[in-house]
Every structure is written in structure tokens, then in C-alpha cells.
Image 1 (spheres, helix red, strand yellow):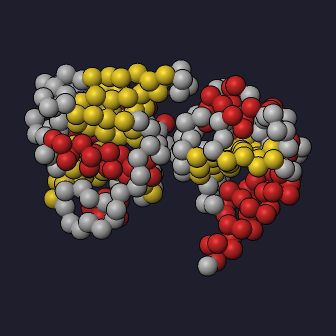
Image 2 (cartoon, helix red, strand yellow; image 1 turned 60 degrees about the vertical axis):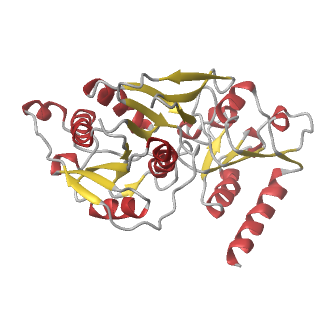
Image 3 (cartoon, helix red, strand yellow; image 1 turned 45 degrees about the vertical axis):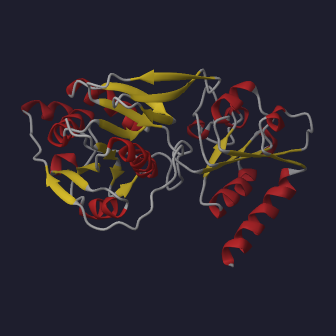
Length: 329
């Protein structure tokens, strides 16, 4: 087993998931302690542009599984492809993003490669004997679970999005290793024919580094327009509270909270969100929280880094204008 750190680079149609690149940052910190290289695994079809960007992000070696059957994600074929890449690279540690794909793929690959697995990790430490320790938030961020791997076994972990920063893209060139895709007769039983995107061109709240969320105080779906305008100005995603979704102002795919999606962006802007316990459970892990509410006693202010007491219909457009002016120079 080498001392390398292998990172699975999740991509869809040539677009790399930012959380996968953030995992490269985590790998860089660990590689400085193991003394090994940062390697990457790229799976898909016609992935040359993806490989080129990964090289710029600091990977010393890229293991490429490029085949037409891998054009669309399929748990069966991708698990076998990544398992083969892991076997070829023989790394000490395997990292991947704790995305929807990562949560589906990681346990399958861990079984195939006889690896220990810790999911949704936010911090890592490496002991002198090479044993990896990982911290995982549990009970909606109210506590942390610390997991220690056995030093003699391969160690695999998924990294929570937006926990680590994006890597510098100043690198150039890497060793490229082609890993043949081993087709199986049973693949025909689990062919992915189509993947339909339900959110249009809007970013998913679980993957965005900035999330702007609206509450029931928006009063209608039409009024959510100002939330979208601020989110687009910030290049972020639009979220909604459960009350707003239940009222039909936004689809439940945008719901943030215990019964919705858990988000961990660098910046979370809550507009007209009171801050019920179930909502706080889904966003308290955000790096910076800004709350806008007319109620000075709203629970959201208890977790906010910055609070604005005022009418969101006045404040939000002003923020949008300020962001646009700042970007304009």
C-alpha cells in the first residue's frame, strides 16, 4: 500500500462538483503528513477537460476510467470502476465528496476494496503510525463523533461540502494512468438511460457555497423573486423554510431544515425566517449566518453572526443592489 491520497473527482457532463475539488484541499493537508502524492480518480466518458482541470488543482497522478457505459452515473458500474482505480493506485487514504453520489457510492466501494469508511467528515488528523482520525457531526451538529481507523487498513472518508476551501489552480501536468473499464454481463440489468434534473439551472442548496433562504414572511411565490435576485447576484442557491414550502411558495426540493436538506455554506442569508428548531438543525453548520427579520426576538438571531432588524422587502433589494455595484467595480 502506497502513502498516496486518492480523491474521487465527481463530475456530471464535464462539470466538476466543487465539493470534489474541496476534497483535494483536504488531501493536500493529509499528504503533507503521509509523505505521499495526491492522486485523483476521474470516471466518465470523454473526460479529458476534467482531467486537465484536476491537474491544475494539484494532483500528481490521475487515474482515468473512460468508457461510453460510464457517461451517466450508475451505482453498479461506477462502484466497479472506482474500485478498479483504487486497486490500481493502492492508496493509503481515499476521499470523496459527501454528495448524493458520494453517499451512494462510498459504501459500495468500501466493501469492494475492504476499506474502513467514515462519512460526512469535517476534520481529519493523522497519527504518527498512519492511522487516520475523522470528525463527523451528529445529531444535527449538536455533537461530534470522532472515528479512528486502523493504521494497517485502507481508510476511506467522505468530506462534507464547503468544509475545506477550493484548491489553487496553479499546477500543471500529472502522471496519467489509464484504468480499463471491465464490463460485466449483468450491467444490462441496471442501465441508466436518463438523468433528469428537476431544479432547472438553479444550484442545489446542499452544494452551494452561498445560500439565500426565504421564509413564510415572503407571503407568496411571486415575492420570492427578490430572494432569487439576491442569490443570483451572489452566485448562490435559493433555499426556503418549511413553512414557505408548505404554503406552496417554493418546492420542497429547496427546503432547508431537519425535514428538508442540511446545508453547510460559507454564507447563509436567512430572510424572514423565524428560526424554528427544525430549521436551525439544517443550517447551523454554516460558516457565516446573516439574519433579516422584523422580530427582534426571532430565534434565528441566536445563531446569526450578523443580524438586521428590518423589513426584508426593503433590505433584500438594497443588498442586491450593493452586491451588483461591488461586482461592477
